Image (tube, rainbow, N blue to C red; front, side):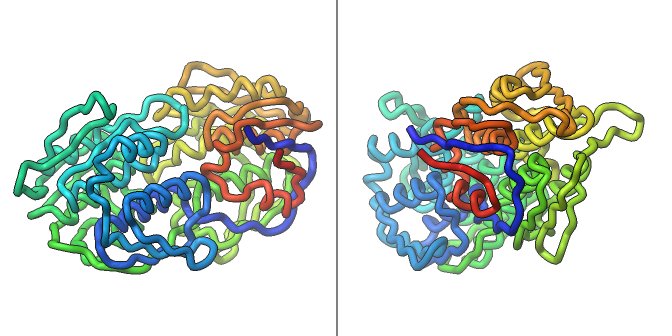
Length: 437
C-alpha cells in the first residue's frame, strides 16, 4: 500500500492549474456508448477512477485512442453485448462507483443492463433507487440476480424505452444523468422534474444535444427530452474540477500562502468563492483565474443575527458535499467557529478523529455535524500517522499534514489518486515537501 510522507510547515507560492472534472468525465465518457460514431473528448483527468472506467469500456469493445495527455477518442460501434451480461463484467462494475453511468446508455441501446451495487468511497449508504425507478418509469422491468448480486434491468421482447413524466425523489446528479442518457433514445417525450442542474450535468446535456439529442430546460430542474432514433459523434472539452479548485483555495489558506489558480471557469463555480470568503479568504477574480493572497488571519463570518456560521451541502447551486471535508480542515486554523453540516453521507465526517489527534478543536456532534473552533494559526497542528478513508477526506488530511509541525505519513493514498492527478508532483512544484513511498 502506497503512502505519502509529508514534511509540513512550508509556505507555498506559484501557479497551479486544476485538472479536468472527475464527476463530469465519468458521465461524458459513459455517454460515448450511446452512439456508433466517434466521440473526441479533451481535458480528461488521468486519475485512477477514470482510467478504470476507460479500461471497462475497452473490455466492452469500445475502441479507445489516446492522442495526448487528456485527449481521447472513443468509438462504440462494436459493443460485445454478451460480455456486458457476463458475471465478469458485473463484478468489475461493482468495484467502480462510476460504472453506474454506463447503465442508462446500455439500456437505451441494447434493452438490457446489469446494475450492481456500486463501489467507491466508504462514506456511508449511497442509494441507487433514483436510477432504477427512473428506468422503470421509462418501461424497464427489474429483478434482482442473486448470483451476480445485481439488479437486472431489461425490456420485453420488441419493446423500446417509452418517454413519460417523472418526479425524482431526490435531485441526484448521477441519477439525473443516467435517466437523461436513456431518455435520449426513448420513444416520445420524457419530462424530469426535480432534476439535478449542476454544471457537469449541463455539460452532459449540451454534448448530447450536439450529438443530435433534443433536450430543453438545460440548467433548470425541469428537463424535457424528446427521444430520437440515433445519436452521432461530436467533440467535447471537460470543465476544470471545481472540487480541486476549492481544495487549492483551502490549501493556500491553511499554509498562509499566496497562489494563483489558473483557468478555473469562474462563472461555473457557483457559491464556492463566496463560501471561502465567509471563512475569511480574500480571494480575487483575475479574468478566469483565482488569486489567493497571503493573509495573517482568516476570520469566519457570523450570520447577521450574530449566530454561528453554518456551512451545509445542498443541491446545486448549493455547496457540494465533496467540498465539506477540505472546508472543515481549513476552518481548524481560521479565527472563529463554524458548524459543518454534511447532510448527504453519514460516514464522511468520521475522519475528524485524525484531525483531533493532530490538535484540531472539533466537536463531532453526530454523524452529520461537526463544530470547528479555529486556532487562528496560534497553534500549529501536530504531525501524525493516518490513513485516507476516501478521496475527499484524503485530500483534506494531506492539506492538514502540509500545515502541521513535523513529518506525517498518510497511507492508503490510492484513495487520493482516484480523484487527484499527480497531486504530489503538482503541490511540490508550489513548494510542498511530499514524498511518495
